[in-house]
Image 1: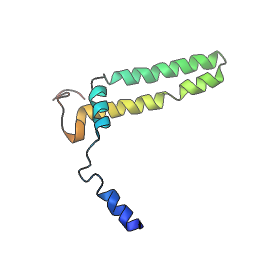
Image 2: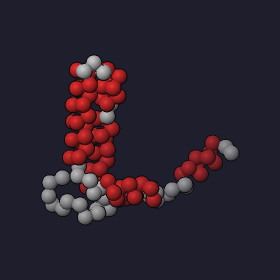
Image 3: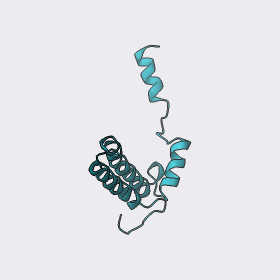
Image 4: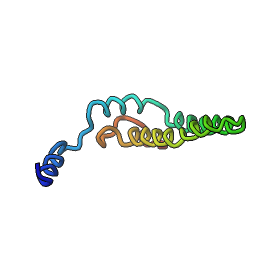
Length: 99
């Protein structure tokens, strides 16, 4: 298969740019979670990491200290799904209120 054929196949694989069933299901469940849950999880993991560092458990502190960024990214994804909805359609989240 030539590079051009491979590019054409990739371009025509999902022409509507629709989400798959797994992503849609995950979005439906995570959209029900409050956005501040992810913020508190990030802050909590920072506190646990600092505590472990004070206790001289450096490896554990480093491990837990890497959790805040993924929690915040998940919170951002959660917020985008709530505001934008699935596939860019509004899903009945907050209307007219604060986002």
